[in-house]
Image: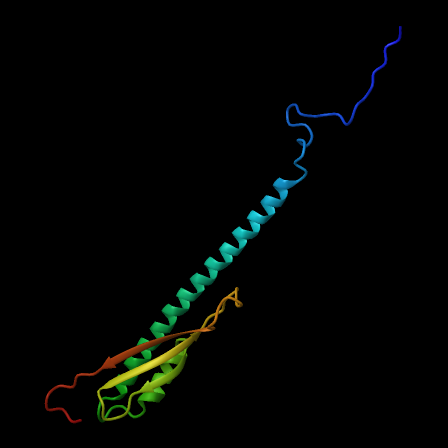
Amino acid sequence: MTCRLRRTGRPKFRFWGVGPPPREGGNAAILMLAGAGLVMILLIGLADLASFFIARTRAQTAADSAALAAVAELIPSIGEDPEGKAEEYANANGAELLECSCSMGTSIAEVRVAVPVRLTLKGLAGKQSVEARAKAEIALPAGSPG
């Protein structure tokens, strides 16, 4: 009597993690790739959010300094050009002066400035600049000219 060994199908490697498990041909790799992509988009979004808040702070600083410079120019017999001084201070802080309501003979200066924002996800952002407003008032002592 002779004994024959027959092979049926492919060999199954199920012990000690050797070889791929049955019916899972690379699904984990696809899930890892999708997860890594989502994490990258989340990190880019957080970086854009931080960039926006930094620009917002810079815009408010520029508006405050421009308003204070303009109101200092409103002091009678000292200042000459409040709007020019407001623009100078706004530009020194990296902003553009959009509006300045500060005419000689008044005691209030209101300014509006814009600071550009660099965003990575530009398709999702509607604005490419951040605006800020500031108002300053000077109180002259009683009996002073003006």
